Image 1 (cartoon, rainbow, N blue to C red):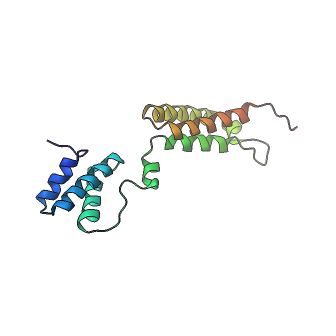
Image 2: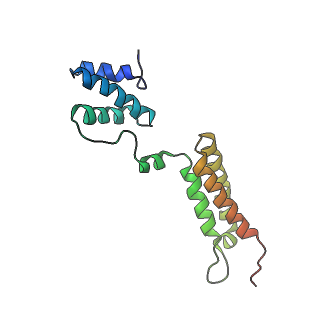
Length: 148
């Protein structure tokens, strides 16, 4: 029995719906391509019906925003940016990281779990950017004060 990744699955669907031969072939191409690009089977079905049967020009595959939201490295990136913002010096000459050091250590620990989780799920690009932001935050925090 064919799965969602196979052209035959989508061609069988189109034949069952009574579409003509050209639409059957196109449904196989569009459906399998949508699955390969990361869409769920329900999303791929919507694309096949809209693009092949109704003739609308719809995107095959998720949008950039959907790809970013689905990326497992996004929490690591957000955590790295928050860590970097936390080491900024405020008006009193103190940073959030030095004032609330226990909370900053908890943030860095959580950030490491996010980075490891992102790398384990092959979302290495955003995870490495988050790691770089975290390393930069620690570098700024632990660097000797040269401007005094």
